[in-house]
Image (cartoon, one colour):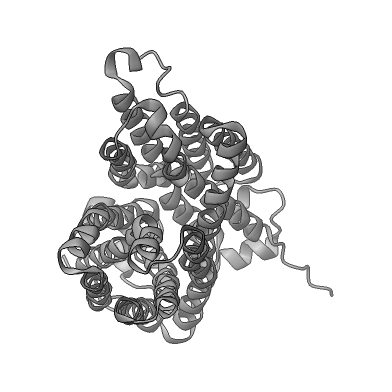
Length: 429
C-alpha cells in the first residue's frame, strides 16, 4: 500500500506571512527615506518630523495586545487582511496629508501625526497574528522556524526599501513612493485572504497526512500544562510571562538602534562616505534575514531533543549573551570594517533569538498566543521608544563606544532575564 505524500500548504502560508512581513517593513520605513523631500516641501522641521516618526511607534506599541487578542478571537485570516488593508490605506493617505479636509483646521503636522499613528495601529496586528497563524498551522517542532522565517522578512524589507523609495522619489516624486507601497500592500492583503484559512482543516488543499502532522502533540512534556485552561488575565500572573516580556524589551532596545542610528553611526562616527554607509548599512539586515530563520530552526531542533529549558531558554539566553559580546566588540573596535562586521553579526544573532521568544508564547498558551505575543512585542516597542533618543544622547555626552556598550549591557540583561522563564514547573501565581 502506497502512503500518500504529505501536502505542504503550511509552507505556502508561511511564504505569505514572509511577504506580509516585507510589506510591513516597507510601509514602516518608507517615510524615513521620503522625509528628505517631505520636510522642505511641507514646511516641517526635523524635530517635527521626528514627532511624526514617534507617532507610528506609539500606535504600534499600544495596539499590540488588542491586535493579538482580535486574532485569537476572530482568526488571523480576517484580522491580518483588515490590518494590511488598514495600514495600506493610511500609507496612501500619508502622501495626501496636506490635502485632506482635516488638515485645514488641524494643520499639516497634526494631520501627518494622526495618519502615521493609524499606520502604526494597523501594523500592530501583524506580528501577533503571525504568531497566531504559526500556532495553528505548524507542528510543535516547526514553530520556531515558522516565526523566524516570518519575521525574517524584516531583513529583506530593510534591504529593498531604501533603493525602491529613492528610485521612485527620483523619477516620480516622494508621493509616488507611498502610492506604490500602498498598492503592494493591498495586493498582498488580497492574496492572503484568498489563499489562507484560520485552521488547516478549513483549507481545501491540505490533505489528511499534513493535517495529522500539524495536529501532532509535542513529544516532550508541555510546559505549564495548567496554563492552557487559564484566561488571558490569569496568564498575566505568571512570572515567566513577565520575565519573557522584560527580556524582549531589552531586545527591542537594541534592535531600534540598528533601525534608527546605524547608518548615521557609520557616516558620522566611523567616517564612511554616504555611499559606503548605505552599502555597509545593509549588513545588519542581511544578517537578520539569514540568522532569524536559522535561529528558529535551531530552537525547534534543540527543544525537540532536549526540552524547553535547552531549546527555548538556552537559545534565547545564549543568543542574547553572544549579541552583547559582539556589540561590545564592535563598539571598541579600532578598525571601522571590523566594527561593521561585529555589529552586523550582533544584529543577526540578536534576531536568531526571535524564534525562541515567539514560540515560547505558544508553548505557554496556544489559545492566547496572539495576545501573549502582543504583550511581549509591546515590551519590545516600549524599549524601542527609549533607545533612539537615549543612544545619541549618551553618544554625544560620553562617546559612541559608551552608547553602544549600554546597548551591549541591555542585551546581557536580556540574557539573564531568560533564566526567570520556567518551562518545567507548575504556574506561579
